[in-house]
Length: 238
Image 1 (tube, rainbow, N blue to C red):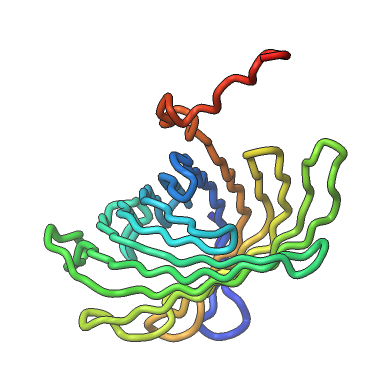
Image 2: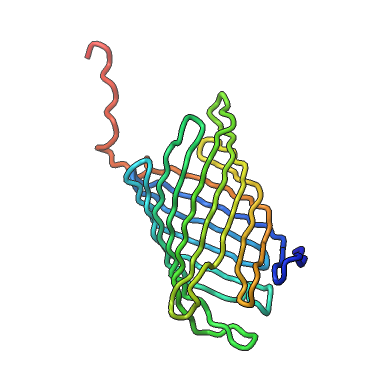
């Protein structure tokens, strides 16, 4: 990790690497299973699962459960555990021939281990976190085989509320990512910055490289009943 102090008082800048995998397994026309895994060394690791309901091509809702491990103010090791029921609603639409937009609201119910005097305690506190993310995508080039090269700009605001936390912004995340989509795979890579307000004042800026893989697996054919299969065509003259 690279750390330096900026000229503005209390503001600090740090470097990090964010790797992630986001996968969905489509089991029915409107239903999928969600799984995603994220890791930032010396910051956090996330394993999250859920069920996706997608009634139309433009809207989807997801609900599930996650496990999170984070570092603390007294150690860079991921020693603080968290249980996280979560849910989200996502809408997306085309904004033109080459443009697309997406808006996502996510709710995190955070059961986090409490902290003592330089130690992580066994009991858990609870708070809510509300997250709103906007995304704009610009298709740069579409290949002859259907592969697409695209540019993505994302902005996510995370807000804490609850009796055990001070209400306010948890952090703001900005991403500028190049993307390449091939059939059911999308690779995203580029720059992000996480702007985290500090309790003592000032801001912590975590600049980093993002590398995410998005993957969809379609297993609907495995769940079809024999009577749902299309009958074979009649022979000529039949």
